[in-house]
Amino acid sequence: MQRELVISEFGMAARRPAGSAHSAPMEAVASSADPLRELFEACKVGDISRVRKLVTPQTVNARDTAGRKSTPLHFAAGKRPRVLQKLTLRSRFIGYGRRDVVEFLLSAGASIQARDDGGLHPLHNACSFGHADVVRLLLEAGANPNTRDNWNYTPLHEAAIKGKVDVCIALLQHGAEPDINNSEGKTPLDVADNSTRSVLTGEYRKDELLEAARCGAEDRLLTLLTPLNVNCHASDGRRSTPLHLAAGYNRSRVVQLLLQHGADVHAKDKGGLVPLHNACSYGHFEVTEMLIKHGANVNANDLWAFTPLHEAASKSRVEVCSLLLSEGADPTQLNCHSKSAIDVAPTRELQERLSCEYRGYQLLDACKQSDITKMKKFLTPEVINFKHPYTGDTVLHMAVNSPYPKRKQVVELLVRKGMHLNEKNKDFLTPLHIATDNLHLDLMEVLLRHGAKVNALDGLGQTALHRCAKEDNVQACRLLLSYNVDPSIVSLQGYTASQLAGENAQKLFQ
Image 1 (spheres, rainbow, N blue to C red):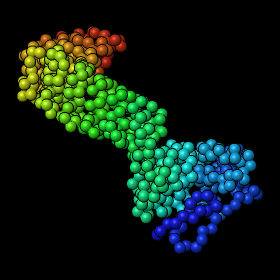
Image 2 (image 1 turned 135 degrees about the horizontal axis):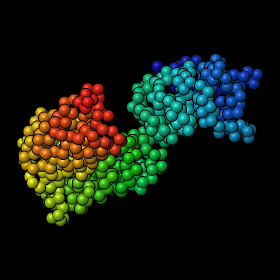
Image 3 (image 1 turned 90 degrees about the horizontal axis):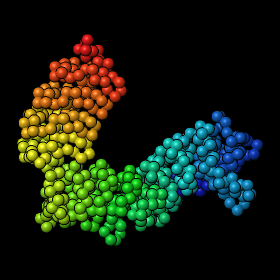
Image 4 (image 1 turned 180 degrees about the vertical axis):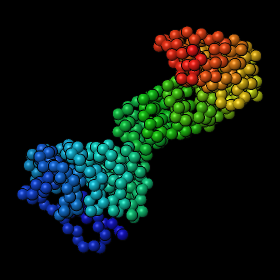
C-alpha cells in the first residue's frame, strides 16, 4: 500500500492509502461546552493551568472519538497553533508550556504507549513537529525510539522527512536505529530532507565535533555526538577520529564519554595509528589505561609497524611503558626498521628496565598458567622476586592462585630457586593466605615445610587460620594448627580464629 501525506486540522501529516477518498479533518474543533474538548484544546495550545484543572484519572487517557482517537498526550506532544499571528498574547505565552504539559500528563498517568488510529505514539507526534525537548522527555520516560506506526514509520522517519535536525540527534542518542525500513522499504536516510541527511550519514557538523574532542569541550561534544558520528574521520590531515584527538590531547573525560558512546578503540588514522598510539606517544597514563580496559590492542601496528610501546619507549614515557608491559605488550616486536621497543629507548637504563619488566611479566604469566617450560625460560635471579607494580603479586602469589594441575611443581621449583616466601601483595596477603583461601592443602604444606610464616597477618590483622576458620575449612585449620599457628591472635576487628570459626572448625579449638 502506497503512502501519501494529507495535512489534517491536527497539523500533522496524516497517512492514508493513495487513491482513497479525501481525508476528513483529523480532529474536530473544540467545543467550549465539553470538558473533554476543553482538555484536548488546552493540550494543543500548551495551557498548563487549564490542563491541571481538567485532567482526571478518567480523562488523562481519553480518546478523541471525533478524530484519530488521539489522547491528551498525543495533542500535547505534537500540536502547534495553526495560525500563530492570530493568537492572543496569552495563547502565545501558554504555547511555550508544551514540555510542562507533557510532563504533567505523564505524572498524572498518561500512557506513553497509546496509539491513535494510524498507530502513532505521542513520540511520533513530537518528532514530526520537531519538539526536541518533548522528545527527550518522552524518551527518558520510557518511550520506544524504534516504535512503528501502521505504515512502519519510526519516529526517526518522521523527524528525518520533516527536517528536524535536533530531534534526529536526540533519537539517535537514545538508541534509534537508522536502518529500519518502512512499508515502502525506505530507511530514515532514504526519506530524509537535505537538512537531516548529514545527521544520518554522520557528517553533520563533523568539524565541530572533532574540535570539541580535541579541546575537551564536553557539553558541546554531547550535543553533537551520535552513534553515527562517534567514529567519524577528519576530512584532512591525519584523518583522526574524535577518540584519536581526545587521546592525544589528554582529554580523559572526553575519552571516557566517547568510549561510553561506542567509540572504536581500533580505528586507524591515515598513518595506521590507533588512539592508543597517540596516548602512549604523549605519555598520557590515565587515557592509556582507559583505552586498554576497553579492549585496545597493546601490540597494534601502524603502517611502519610501530607499536604503542615503540612510541612510549622512544619518548621515555616510563610509567606508560610499565603499564603496557603489564598488559602484555611485547618489547621484542620489530618495526619496519627492524628495531624493537627496547632498541628505540634512548637510555641504557630504560632499555634494561624494559627488558627486566618484560621478563618479569612473562614469568608471572608462566606461573599463573603453570607453564613450566615457559617458566624455566624466564626464571633468572634478576626476576625471580619480581612484583607486579599494581597488584604487588610475586610469582609465588601467581603460582599458588593457579587453577592448573602443575601448580605444585611450579611452587616447589620456585622454593628451590630461593623465592621469598613471605612477601605481601597490595592486599597484604602472603602466598600462604592465598593458598589457604583456595584450600590448596598441598601448596600450604610445601610453603609451611619450607618456612612460610604461619602467623603472618593480612590487612585486617588476620592469620591464615582466621581466614580458613571463618570458611569452616576443617582440613586447612588442622594443617595450620599442626605447624603451631597461634590461635590466640586477635584481629583488628577484635576476633580470634575460634570466634570466627564455623560449626565444624569450632570443634578444633575446644
